[in-house]
Length: 287
Image 1: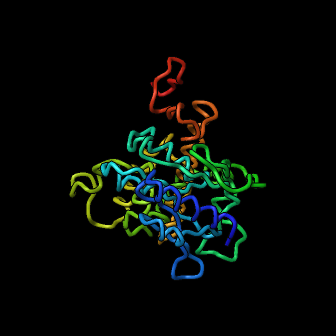
Image 2: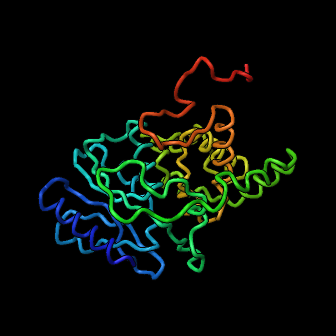
Image 3: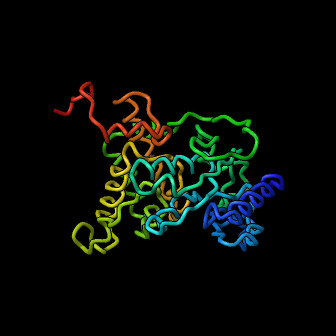
């Protein structure tokens, strides 16, 4: 545990609550298991002592803002680099108001995967391009001495080089494992629709957990996130069946990169996703 960062977090949260600048602070506390640090929602200054920072603060806290988007509360939350991109995602999607959020950035040295604690760093952190938050009201922690140790789209070529039949077999095998728990959807800051099509009875998706329905679910969700995925990897982290969800998300991101020029979602608040705006010079090979 980083005692210095933990101390800073507790002092800052206590001050914000005491001065009534915010009504809630969202951070992490130590969980009941050794390799878990879990979200905590602090509303009393005295409870700021619950806050911690360690290598297992994996949860992207930004998604919890959706639960309070109509509350009128001003909420402070701690964000890593990927989490800060989630804030930008929610702002661009007009899901939250900037004046209702106080963003405290944490320069992130990378976190560990609580499912594989023996690894030095989580797999998703190895290709992180933004260990420093891209949006914040104030920031704590020293600038991380860390750069991506693999290419952003490393491993995608393996699937691209497959034949159509091989690709079908690969994804069919993965989607056959899906139990349709919707954990990937629920954790994703890009899945912010007020009413998800997959909750509309059997209009779009059968209740049966079968291959065809699973594939429809995953492909629909992936295309919904095209140009909007912040590549935080939370969907893959929470999947109980270990489906490589980010491989498809990264492939789509790579294609958008190729079609519309270098682009990373939710890095710049003023830059909207390529598929969310119109340019006369956009490619039209599909027409």
